[in-house]
Picture 1 (cartoon, rainbow, N blue to C red):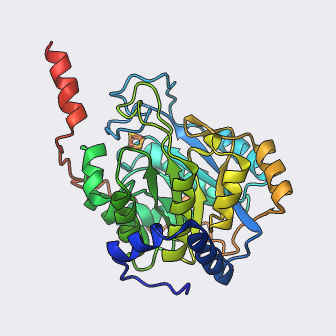
Picture 2 (picture 1 turned 135 degrees about the vertical axis):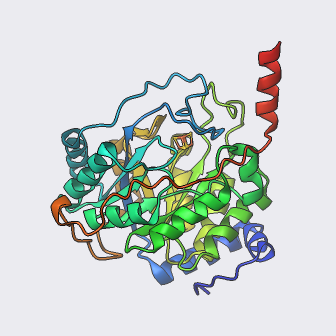
Picture 3 (picture 1 turned 180 degrees about the horizontal axis):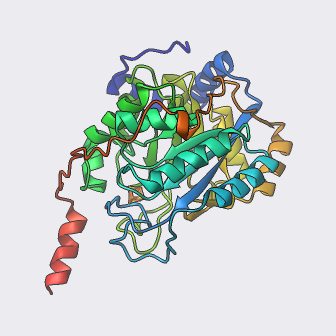
Length: 362
Ligand code: SF4
C-alpha cells in the first residue's frame, strides 16, 4: 500500500472511492502515515493580488467580469502591500503564501515584473511562495523559478468531460500544457479541483485519474468544495456533504501518497469534527486567512484553536523541498520574450450560456 503509481484507471479509483467508509478511512490513514507525520498540517495563506475583471467564464467564479456579483475588484497590489500581508501571515503560523491574480494568462510586461518582485520579496522572508496567475509559457515559468517561486497552482477543476460544462473560454489541454511548462523548471506543481459543481462522482474520479497519472504527480492537490456565490451560474448548487469531502480527501491520499492534500474553499461549512475526519483521511494542508481570494474562510485564531484541540502542529517551510534561490532581475538569465501564445478558446456550448443568450433576446 502507499506506492506511487501512474497508471490509475477510473475503475481502480471508483473502487477506492466507494469502499465502506471505515475501510476507506483506515486505508487512507495507513498510506498517510507511511509518507507523512499525521500531526503536522501545512498552513498556507491565499492572497488575491489582483481581484475581479477576469475575461474567463469559469461558472463558479465571482471574479469573472461577465457575472454580476458583489465583488469589489482591485488593481495589482504593490510589492510593499504584499510584503506586509506576508509578514502578517507568517506571524500567524503560515509557511506559504499563494498569490492569485484574476488573469486568463500571464503577459510579459510591467505587471508580471511586479509579480516577480513579489516572489523575490516573499522568498527572502523564508516563506514558500506560490502563484496562481493563469496560463503560463515555459519562459515565464523559468522567470518565476529564477525569482524564487516554490510552487505554481493551476487547477484542473474537474474531469476533462465535465470541464466543458463549467468553462468554455479555454480547454482542458491548456491546463495540462501550463502544468507541463512548470515541470520544465524546479517549481513544484499544485493542481486540484472543485467538487459540488453538479458533477457526478465519475467526474471527481476522472479528475483524480488526470492528476495521479501525471508523472511526477502534483506536489500539492487542493480539494475545494464549491462556495456558491450569488450572481454566478452555479449560485443555486447545494453544498456538498462532509462525507463527500472525506471520501475525496481519502481517495486523493491513496492515489497520490506523497502529495500535500489541501482542504481549500468550503471550510466555513465544515465543523471541526468534519475537518478532523478529513485530516485523519490524509488531508495535511489548509488555507488560512479570513478570505480565500474572495469567498469567506475560517478566522486564523479559530484554526489555531482547532490545531490545539487536535494536537496538530503547523508544518515548517521547505521541509519537503529545499528553498529555491532568488536571482535578482538584473542577473536573470531568462528575459521577457513578449510571446503571444495561442491558448485555445474552445467555446464549448454550455446550457447555462445558451439560456442566458435566450433571456437577452427577450
Ligand atoms: S477562476 Fe480564475 S480564470 Fe476563472 S474566472 Fe475566476 S479568476 Fe478568471
